[in-house]
Length: 114
Image 1 (tube, rainbow, N blue to C red):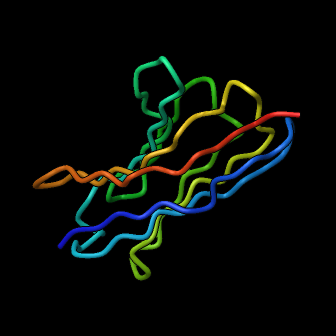
Image 2: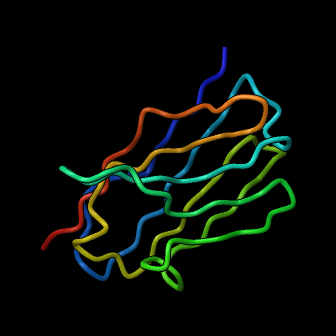
C-alpha cells in the first residue's frame, strides 16, 4: 500500500520558518518525480515546488528564494524548507509522487499569522 504522509505544518508568525516533510512508503521513491502543492481556502491547488529524479528543481515564482525542496531517496523522504513565510503562504500543503502513477498525501496545514 502506497502512503505519503506530510508533517511539519503549524502556526508561524510572518517572517518565520517551517520545514515540511513527506515520508513515503510502498514506492521506490528514487523512481518518482516529487512535488509540493498547496491549496488556500477558496483557491485552486497550485504547484509550489518540484524535484525530478535527477534532483533538478523548479519553483513557483512567488516562493523562489524563500523555499527549498530536497529529497533523500535512502530515507524515502522529501522536504520543503520554507523561510520568510508570509500570510499569503497560508494553505494546506500536499506531497505528490509521480512516475507510473500519481500519489498524493493528505496534507498538512500551514498558517502564517501574527
